[in-house]
Image 1 (spheres, rainbow, N blue to C red):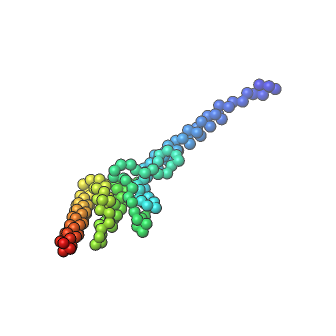
Image 2 (spheres, rainbow, N blue to C red; image 1 turned 90 degrees about the horizontal axis):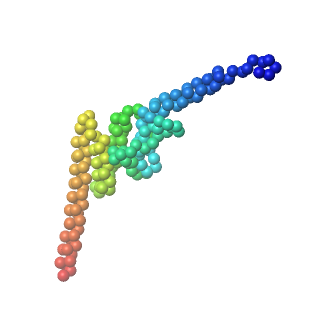
Image 3 (cartoon, rainbow, N blue to C red; image 1 turned 120 degrees about the vertical axis):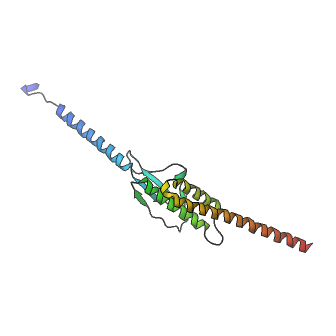
Length: 174
């Protein structure tokens, strides 16, 4: 060392920096693990989606994949409340409720709406209701699927009546 000064020891500084970096990484991993257990029901402009927290920064949420978690199309006047939970069963219940609400909405009234979409939503709801605790909900879903069949048959009868009336007019004209 010049001028008789003692040499500087830098290893404590390097050790402190390494410990700080290691602690920061550990905190990021723990926060990521905690956030990855979060589930959310999100309301967007045209649909409802189910999401799960991401475990790696930037945290946030990513949409759940699979047939049971397809986005639910909603009309502009539909009510939707975003929610978060740490229980996937609770998220399933919320999503199932939203699916049934939209399918029921399509099946209500004297002239039901999009029967194909209602049937697809009910099939999706059946995927979410497979657990034994949801046995009663499955029965309600099957009843609603029967309503879809009823409205399809009613539409065929209406079309047949229109065809017969048209044929009768043809005979009258002849």
